[in-house]
Image (cartoon, rainbow, N blue to C red; front, side, top):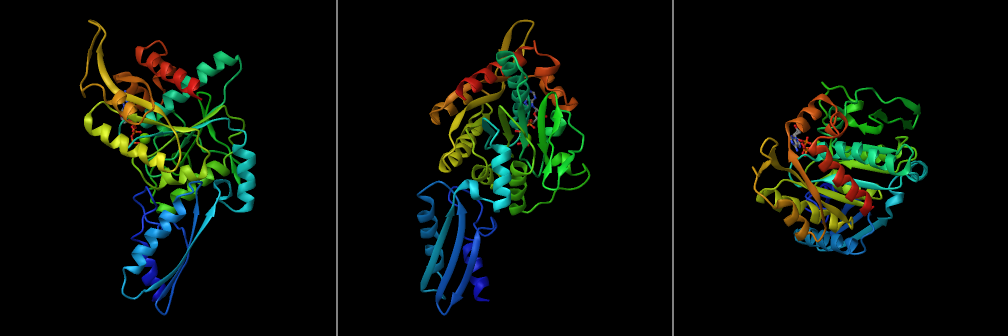
Length: 353
Ligand SMILES: Nc1ncnc2c1ncn2[C@@H]1O[C@H](COP(=O)(O)OP(=O)(O)OP(=O)(O)O)[C@@H](O)[C@H]1O
Ligand SMILES: [Mg+2]
C-alpha cells in the first residue's frame, strides 16, 4: 500500500522538459513509505548538471503535498549517457557507435510535415555529395525511431528482413546504398505495434547498441512527431551532433516547431538548423511559385531559435510519388528542381558538420 501511494504520487512528476512522467519512463529504483517518511531513489541518465536538483525539488513538492507524508529522503542517481545500459551493452555500444562520425536527428513538433521524406532524401543526397567529394563510397545510416508508425522502409523501398550476425547483433538492410534500421523491418505489416513507453526507450537503445552499423560517415535519425519519450531516450542514448527541425510555412507549425526545439535545448542537444518543407508549388510553365501555406515560417523559426535556415523544399507530386513507390526523388529524378533544393540542404548540413 505504502509503495503504491508513493508511486502514484510520483506519476505526477514529469521528467523536466517532457510531457511524460518519471514512473512510466521506468526511472524509479525505490519508492516506499516508513511511517510518514517517504524514501525515493531515481536513476537518470543526463549530462545536465541542473537536472537532479530540478527533479528532486519537484518530487519533494509533490510528496510533501500529501497528508500522509511529512518527511522525505529523495536520492537522484546520475549516470553518464555512455553507461545507460548494462556493462556488456555499454561495451557493444562503444565498439559499434564508435565508428559513426556524426549523428543528426530529424524532428518536428507537428506530425506529417515531411520529416521522414526529408530524412530519406537527405540521406540519399548526402551519400551522393559525400561520395563525389571524397571519391570513395560514403557510408550513411538511417535509423527510424518512429516505433509506433515506422515509415522509412516504405519511403526508401527496404523490405528485406535484417539478418542476424550473432546473438546480440543484427545487420541493417541496405537500400540505395543507405543502411537502414526500422521497427517496420522487424515486425510484419499486419502486426499492430503496441509498445509501452519504456519499450520505446529499449528499442532505441537496441537500435544503437545491437545493430552492426559499421563505419558510418553520418547516421540520420528519423523521429516521431512531438516531444515524447523517443526524443528523450534518443538524447540520452545517442551522442547527437544536433537536430534538424522540419517545419511547414504556416503560423501554427511555427509555434509547434519552436516548442519541439526547446525540448532539445533542455537536454543540451544543439539545433543545427531548420528546413521548411512544402514551401511552395511551382508552376514550371510560367515559372511562378504559389505559397499555399503562407510564407516565411522556416526562416522565422530559424531566427527564433537562433539557428541556421537550411533551405526550402517545394510541394511536389513527384516527392509524394517517390515516397509511395519507395524511390526517393533525389534518386529517381536528380535533375528535378526539388532534388536540387534537397541537395543544397545536404550541402549546408555537411558544411555545418
Ligand atoms: N515536399 C513534399 N511535396 C509533396 N508531398 C510531400 C512533401 N513532403 C512530404 N510529402 C508527403 O506528405 C506525407 C507525409 O510526409 P512524411 O511521412 O515524410 O511526414 P512526417 O513528418 O514524417 O510524418 P509523421 O509525423 O507521421 O512521422 C507523405 O505522404 C509524403 O509523401
Ligand atoms: Mg515520419
